Structure formats: structure tokens, C-alpha cells
Image (cartoon, rainbow, N blue to C red; front, side):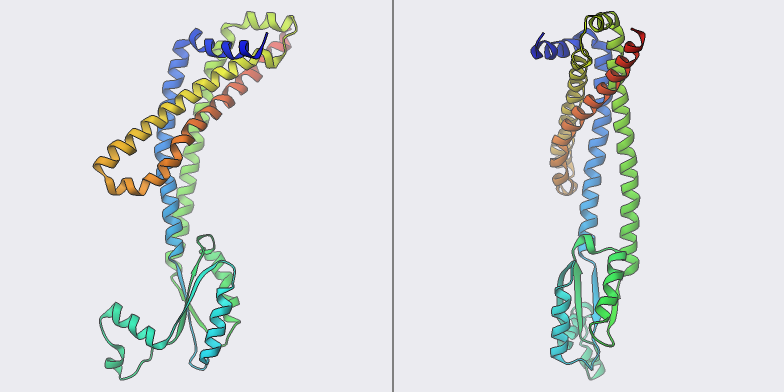
Length: 294
């Protein structure tokens, strides 16, 4: 008996148990569609979180006692710090221009002089724009020069982290629930197929067939069910995003499209993996029971 026989048995196994296989594929399809839609939104949300983190600024106000050369040296040192994406020096004149742009008033005309301090504006790599990372940066920057005043929107950054953690927990929990449900469904179908052919399996065991030879067709059967569910789910998600959403909500489509392009092949692969995993669990459990009875 060759490998081609095992593969052929795996394909024909679905035909022998059409109704359980159809039910499993259908339920797994809806589960994977839900997972695909939710995963697309989740990936887009994480991209948004990264974008918001990249916009976080830490502003270092310089004392008037610092010379221009000292300010330039501090700026150069900050640029070399790990995680710093950008460090731009803002002179007093530039600060006045920014004030006029933001508030529509000339601070020099109002007060007769320019009281705005010089500063250095820092932007971080997204993975470093976290409250704990920034808290480590602040004492290092303060040690570079005396009388530095450091400001950043801590509340805004804390809200980003809290929302990111909450969403990660929700998406991870839902994804795990759907994956477990798909594995159980496919495993249940394979177990039904095993029980339906238990006499044949017992005979094969008695004549010396290995566990791998007996179980391989059922693993292939489970893999086919999972792959079919994944392909159908990928097609359904494609229709939702590329046809419906692109036509009726093009703005949302542009946001979700990059994540959706990753989800399409991932759904097919995930269906295959879950199918193999579910069938392996059922086959191993059943063969252990059969071995004890012999």
C-alpha cells in the first residue's frame, strides 16, 4: 500500500460521511468568516495604535543659560539615543512662528518681547513610544544639561496603551474561542468517521498496520475539511471587503484594505492548520483506545 492509497482514502473519506463533513465545513466556514472580519479590524486597529504612538512628542525646554553650542550638543546626543526617531531643535524665533500659526497672534507684538523658550522636540519609534519607555528616557535627558524642563501628554499616551491592551485581550480571547470551536468540530467529524470504520481499523491493527498508516487518511480528511472552510471563508471575506465595502464605504475600505490583503491567505492557511490539528487529536485519542482493547 502506497502513499497514493493514503491520499485517495483521505479524499474518499469525505464522500463516505457527507452529512457530518458538510455540517462541519459549514459551521467552520461561518466561524472563520467571523474570525477573518474581526482579525481585519483588529490589524487595522493595531496599525492605528502604531500611528498614534509615532505622533507622541516629548518636548525638552532649554534654560536661557544654555548657549547655542550647548543646545546643539544636547540635540545631537538625544538623536543618538535608542528609540529616538527624530529630534528637532526649535529656536525662540521658530517658537514664536509656531505660536502665531497656532493662535493667530504675534507674541512679540502682544508682549513687546519673545518670552518663549527654546526647545527640542522628540519623536520616538512606535515600539518605544510607551509610558514605561519614556519614563526611562526622561532622567537620561535631564542628566545632559542643567535646568531642563520636559513635557509630554502622559494622559494621551496612557489612554492609547489602555485601549491597546483591552483590544488585544478581546481579540485574543475571541480568536482563541473560534479556533478551539473549529478544532472541536473537525475533530468530532473525524471521530465519527473512525467509529463508523472501527472494525476495519481493528483488523488493520491486528495484521500489523502502523498507527500512522491507519490515521493518515483521516488527518488528510480533516485537513481537506479545514482547507475548504478556509478557502470559502477567504472568498466570503473578499466579497465583503472588495465588493460591498469598496462600493458603499470607500473610506473605511481604504483603512481596512491593507489588513484584509493579509487575512485572505491567512484564513485558508488557518483552516488547513486547524483541520490537521483537530483530526490529529481525534486520531491519536481513538488509536490509543483501540490499542488498549486489543
